[in-house]
Length: 231
Image 1: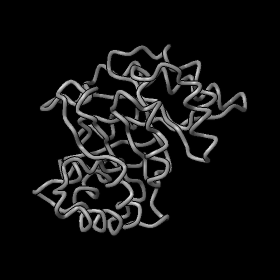
Image 2: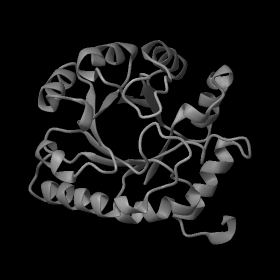
Image 3: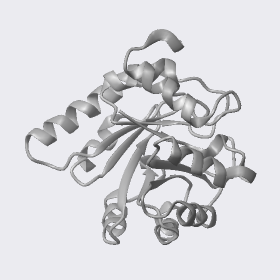
Image 4: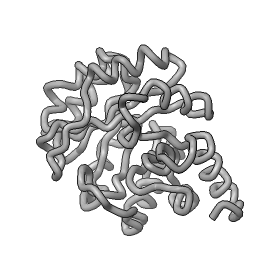
C-alpha cells in the first residue's frame, strides 16, 4: 500500500519546504483537498487552482498530483484544475449530476479521473462506472467535518469495492486504484491495507509538529511491515 500526504495540515507559509521534505522522504504522490466553502458541511475554503499550479511548478513532473474536489460545481470548473497541472481530478459522486459525462470530458484531456464516495453513500452508486474510472476513493470521515476519528464501519464498503475491482481485473477490464481518506495513521494503516486499499491519504499522521515527514512515514511503513516497536 502506498501513502500520499494531504497538505491541509501543513503550514502554508512553509509549504514549499514541506513538499520538498515529502519528496526527499520518498513520497511520489501528493493529494490536494479543494473545498469551496459551500459543499462541505463546515463551509471551509481551502485553496484552488492557483496554489495547485504553484505546487506543480515547485515539484516538476516527477511527482503525481491529484485534486480532491469537495465543491459544488466540479462539472463547470474541472478544466481549471487540469490547466493547473494535476494528473488526476477526483470528484464526489454525490456532487455531480452526470458523472459519465464528466469522465469523458476529463479523460479527453489526457487527465485521469477518480470518483469519491462519502461514508454513507452505497457502493452501488459507483459500480456501474468502475470500467471507466482510474480511481475510487472511499471517505472514512465525513468531508469537511473537523475532529473526526477514522470510521471502521466503512470496511464492508471497501471490501465490496475490492472484490468488484478484482473481478473486473480477472475479466480483463480496467482496474481503478482503490484509495481511502480520513483518520489514517500508523495504528490503522495495516488494517486498511488488509481490506484491500492500494493507496491511503494521510494528513496529520504525516505532516505534524511532533515529527518530520520522513520519521512519520517510517513509522507507518514499520506498522505495515508488522513492526510493533513504534506503537
